[in-house]
Length: 104
Image 1: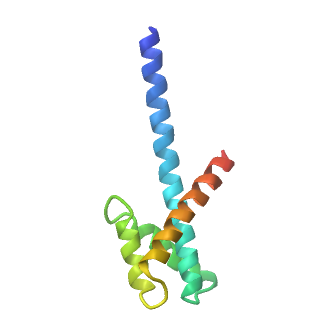
Image 2 (image 1 turned 180 degrees about the horizontal axis):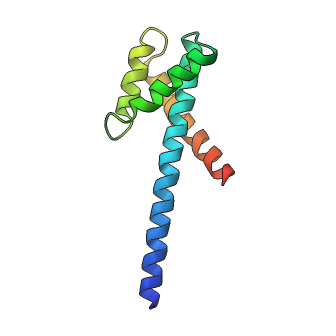
Image 3 (image 1 turned 45 degrees about the vertical axis):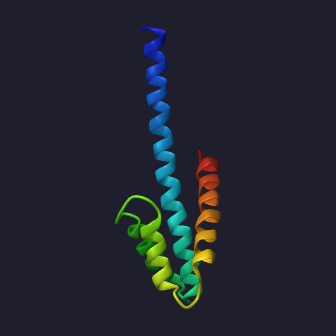
């Protein structure tokens, strides 16, 4: 083994770890967004959990955050504007990432 091989393996390992962390944080953020939106919609208990799951699964429509934003925007059309939703998305992204990092 050369130093180059060791560095290459370390880089690949870090890349895989970062990708996994990002995936978990995005899924957590989407669940948190779903719980936030469910509360605004007056959903509680199993209905709130089921709604949060629909927000999580909406992220599988296309790469990026726009699919989640569109879902929330449509569902909250008369209760929250674009700025409110996007601000909450950014806020909960940080919260989710911190939660994931603290679990490790």
